[in-house]
Image (tube, rainbow, N blue to C red; front, side, top):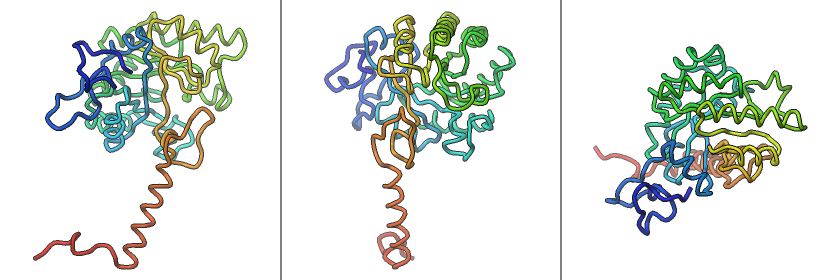
Length: 294
């Protein structure tokens, strides 16, 4: 995102609308990304970046890299906690992860997922759950679903809680959808998806994630809405993109079709662990420089 901040930017701010992601010693801290900056970026045609984060160490690195939004996703379930889906993730787990990410973040907008079973009963349940995530440090919450969630989105907004919507393939509905399948194919399904997006926007959502949606459908939604769309497997014409950080960084040997590896962190970590093990076994670590005198 390269839109200008509220005050004029100097030469060192050119790469970011809120100042450099990692300011030099003594420099003024970077301006934090706020929800109103998202629509401003869309108006100026500037792309938004979002990555997942589940802990303080990773969040600090991604924040310093200039990522606009950090998503504390319920994908923590199948990425970090060993589950097959996001369904087993508990609100308590999301609170801990959100608090960890928020403590390490100075610039990015922190968005936290409402996990399965914590908002579907209606606005009252959703508000109680969302308040816990906001108290943990989130700047916004994300929930899945379209028109049936509009009243909840409106209620949260009226309570001062920004909401990011999530349409297309919604992982919490994996059983109803019959697996990990592209959504919005065919005229009827596409029209339903468009109607869902419009309903969320009218209810006050600040952005909408479009996951595994045909590119023409995602492009149409993007053109219709004043709020930004964030794509994941939805083509290049969304207002921004999101990836799971382990997919983006090449942490594992497999990644979904819509992901691109921008590094090979997994092999590098494996190599470092092997080098450490070799050094311990051969006695070359620790040395005197890693030890304390009496």
